[in-house]
Length: 364
Ligand code: MRU
Image 1 (tube, helix red, strand yellow):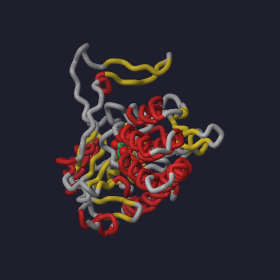
Image 2: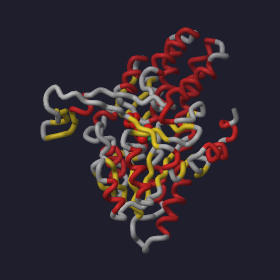
Image 3: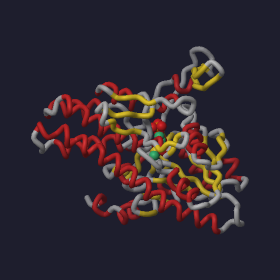
Image 4: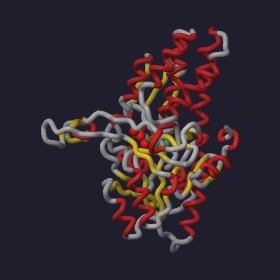
């Protein structure tokens, strides 16, 4: 998608420097900084400290991390060590394990001298596939937005609430939850997006930055405003992303998603989740019981980053020494989800719904 009119992906390989380039998202929306990853430690830090973030982008970055490691040392031991170090970076988004497993499974049978080139090629494929998956999610989600637009007076915007950033920055391109919005905007359907702030890290500011760059009407709202807007009939639908979805359709996403789903159900607002298939964990059936929820540093809650006339800085919002808790994700049970928007179409959030679209994955 575009930054100041120039198309970008959220990561790309430089043939010149033979290294991965990322957008360092810690500084957005205030500064656009590109970082080159030059060591396995750089890759791990970039994921743990959220220079890159969002489930699909974490997966793609990890695939390049494996390729980087194999270019240094293509032995089985080095591959296992790289897998373990990358896998330990963040626990919740399943795309990380999915990408690491895919690269390892493809490289193990190869002779060592072929692995580095093959792993880089596979990382490129994983990145390109993510773009195509998200494009398809957009075309399927567009049909939902169009159907709502057709029920409204001509010119009235479809009002969509979204939580966190499931935009192009969270993927390689298009985003998941935002892809239907970009497709609807391109199709000339008037939209207004309610962008949840998403404390503590305010990923909503990333979504606002993205939508603003593409001329999509939006308002940045506090996390607590969604229920009120729904009660007043000011939200036509909710679309969020997901970091891990169980085979039964439970959805784990950024903390606060569950509360939006409860409010949506109470107000008969359809609640959709945009779901690329690598985000499905076919080994898990009960999301609340089985998905590991990342606990992030308390400082993300006690402090807040912003910009003033002197630059970007972080200020403390709590009394000195206040203990803080920071669970980063929650689980929305399938019964609260109206539908899952996947690259193969839209299905019910249930084992039967997912198995219908992905029979080859659902088979025991
Ligand atoms: O902690 P983050 O910023 O990595 O969390 C991101 C989210 O929760 C997104 O909504 C999710 O990864 C879906 S992204 C397409």
